[in-house]
Each structure stands twice: as structure tokens, then as C-alpha cells.
Amino acid sequence: MTVLLAEEARYTPEPVELRLRCTAIRPATHDVRTFVFEPDTALAFRPGQYLMLRLPVGERCYTIASPPTRPETLELTVKHHPGGAGSGYLHEELRVGQTLEASGPFGRFSYATQFSYTTRPESRYLFLSAGSGITPVMAMIRTLFDLGSTADAVFLHTARGPADRIFGAELDAIAASAPNFRVANSYGRAGLTAESLAALVPDITERAVFCCGPHGYRERITEILALLGADPGNYTEERFTVEQTGPSTVNYPVRLGAASFECGAEQTVLDAAQQAGVSVPFSCGQGMCGTCKHTLLSGSVHMRHNGGIRPKEIERNRILLCCAKPQEPLVIEG
Image (cartoon, rainbow, N blue to C red):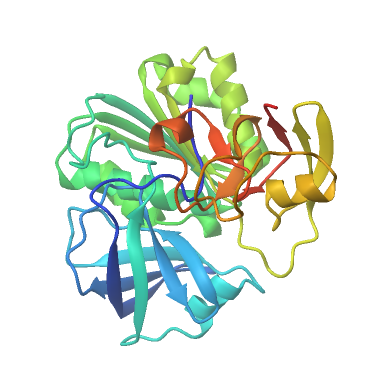
């Protein structure tokens, strides 16, 4: 299994600074909009990567939903979370003609293993998403379709109901025009079962699987894949959390070696450990040296680092305690 952490190591070439001029705003569903931007710099990226926008309310990361095969525009499709500062600004304040500053691309969630987005050798894919997790998957589907890929691709999206189906008309059009692309939907938590997935993709053990969605959904997917005998080595997921709507009061239990303590969702593991009197070696609080590097055994973190950890280490679930914030209960090697 490949697990990708938020703000993970960046692809080469290095991310660039961008100015994005908003050229259109389109409704996607009743609470989701697509924001179309014209970048001042041609951007090379892999389908599935994201940008960091510098908004008046702070920095926010959003996946590029458009494919790199359409370089003249960049599209960000964003759900409006009531009370959420980032999505609130985009939905309520941003207007066509305005310009935003951004940097990117970032992220490692893509079918492309090298910077060229045509190089992944798999001939069969299964893409799984729920809610806003559809955006990186949609970028990959659009890229494969634009390239005329002959890969057999199945895309199953889970939404609350038909009215919440993002990109529904476009996906139906792709499936109608490309017989090697199949699109299916499930609604609500009960709509996705091992039986329904096995019926949809009886050759699931032969497919490269890419999954993006909230924590509960990803847990359900991994359980189903295990029941169906899918190879964990063929599975890649990206973790994300819903935008915070205010100061977080959520605390997660953390077990670090033999020590146990609680850590707030907006608190680093290192800070929480120090408050609990747990001794952890460290040399700074900005993730620059790597002294507080540990292995994450279970759970997920939001980790925005400035160095001190290599991409290969992140692939092995190594984290820096000084800049890792929990997204769920954690077990960390002591």
C-alpha cells in the first residue's frame, strides 16, 4: 500500500510561483463550484497534484482538477464548507477578473510515476473517490481520456445523493464515447459493499487502484479490498481532511513508543508530547533538521515541512513530529 500524506514531498521540477487570473466561475453542484484560472506561467504538473493558494484568509491547498493536457487553463473545483474561511472566500468573494497568488505543483498522488504524465505502464485501473476526493481522480481520468489511452479504466464515485454528484454529465459523456472507460456511482455509506464492487470489477486483483476521500471512506475501501483479495501493493491513496470551520477543539489519542497522550488537531505532535512531559529529541520547531523524525505506524497526519526529511523517507511513513498534526488517532514508533 502507498499512503500519501498532505503537504508531502514535492515532485521535480521545483514548484514555481504563479499569478492566476480568474476567467470563469461555474457551478458544479448546489454547493460546489469550479474556478477557472489563466496562469501567468505555463505549468507542468502531473494529474492529481495540487496548488497552494495565498488567499486573504491564509494559505489553502486545492487540487488541480483540470488535466495537464489542457495547459491554457487551471481549474480548481471547491466545495463550500459553511464557516470555512478558504472555501468561503472563493465562493463568496472571488470574482472573474481578480488575480490570486499561488505556488506549485505539489503532491505525489498520480498514476504518473515520472514527471511525464504518459509513463505509467498499467493497462487496468480502478479509481475510487468520495465527496471532494473526486478532484485528483478527475484530473487523472481527463488526462487518460485526452491522450486517447487504451487502458481499461473503471471509476466509482460515492456521493450523498444524485444532486451531489460532481462532474456527473462530463463523466457520463466520457463513458459514452470511450468504451474502455466505465463510470459507476454509489450513494450513501450503505451503497458501497464488497459484493457490489466485485460485481463491478471482477478482475479487481489485476488493477492498479487509486483512492481519495475522507478517513471513514478510505477505511471502508481498504477493508473491502482486503476481503476481495486485492494486492495492497497495487493500492495508492491520498488523505485529506474537510476544511476547518473555526478553531479546532478535536483531540486525538497518540501512542509514541510506551507513552500515551492527546494531541489537538491544530497542534503538532512534538508540542503535545512536550506538554505531556514526554521526552522527545529535537533541535528546532520548524522541521529543518530531522532530529525528531519517527515512523508512523498507524493513523494519518498533516505535515507541512521545510526540509529535514527525504521523499523516500516519507514513502516509508517517516514523519517529523515538529510539523506533523494529527488527522486521526496515531501510533508512532518510539
